[in-house]
Image (cartoon, rainbow, N blue to C red):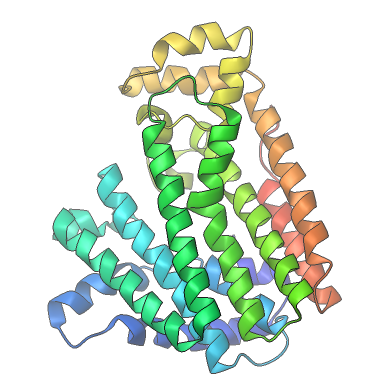
Length: 325
């Protein structure tokens, strides 16, 4: 997914070129080992989705980005990177962005401490942007942790509800998307109504993003995902497609006995097949499409028609192309 192309805001390309050296500069300390660890995933690339949201909101993809706009984008990307360092330890992941994960290369302890360092640098940058942004980022970190704890607490629980799922992803994914847009709106000096509207857009966009990811975990391939397909199922993370399949009168009784425990590859494949053939994928796409409509509606309150169109297109692009059966 080329986010800049989808948004149709060509000035973002130049802004992202200015962002990259700032990202590196923000985590380099002069300690050779620590610098190798903190720049490991930066060097591997990534879509830079959260900085794009911040910069597009701040500048409408038209105006030049100020240093404050760029630093706001750096702050949200460092939080995201830190979450990847920590998530990979929790998941015992070995690959990330097609390179060896930080924990696999340097060990769990180093990965955890390096993730904490990235969070500290993000907080320092946010503090330099003012008390409102610093407080906002601190609140978001709390929401991220709440969402992650809720998900861990629900592991292997077949009684997890759709509300439980929605609350968890609102914290662990949507909160940082919303904050990326809000920080961009704040550094861009937008009126309060527009700040709130873009925050709403980011929240709904984050919900779509996670629902899409959870659909692909069931129907995607390892090559497409960059990780083993069905990993959430195997680890007891029962996402929206699984919950909808469990509620299905035909699929539910077949799927339920497989769950509640770690799954080997044969059981994982069987569970994925049951979910994929149950109609749960179609139901999940309907939910994602509803979030896309809400996101597009929120974006219309922005300062430019170009940005509203770009954000609506970006939101719908996450849903378009998903299987419906």
